Image 1 (cartoon, rainbow, N blue to C red):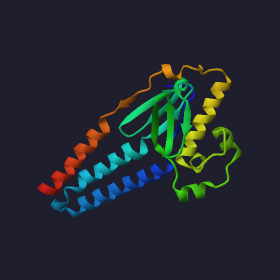
Image 2: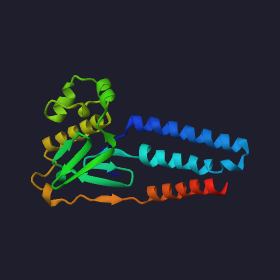
Image 3: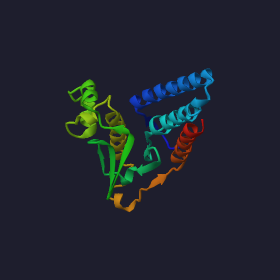
Image 4: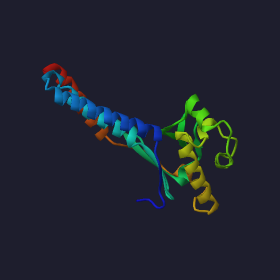
Length: 201
């Protein structure tokens, strides 16, 4: 475990996850109580919804520690050490830039117009200080990208002020994506189960 970790999830994604989990349970209960063999496809469909919601919505996150930033996406994760980081951007989604590469966080997209309006059009002092300039809507606290960005920027600034980040060595650090095949494998198997249920029920 990295030291002094802070993990940021998408609140919206987690709400949608719970809704999908409840929907999957309702579908399975209805199919089971009906006793209709033609509804066999509902069981793998319910499992597919559960798995999809977990891998695509619940699990993705951004974790900030004193060692760097871990981006957990759907099919891979990336760990960006502080020494490799050169820019934090939120234009389309929370994106970390290193020399020659950029890494976007699935769990921290930039907000739509409604979300941006809800978060507030007036930049708060904390957001302005963290961004180093007048922040865009995607930097605002209360948005997925803004919540993650401010945690990263404040930790980054704190470590730089404490001289805990080596300067001028970003180009010497290699940051790689680490592929995780399990989500695609599970979803593929369940999708095949849905198709089989349609044809053989």
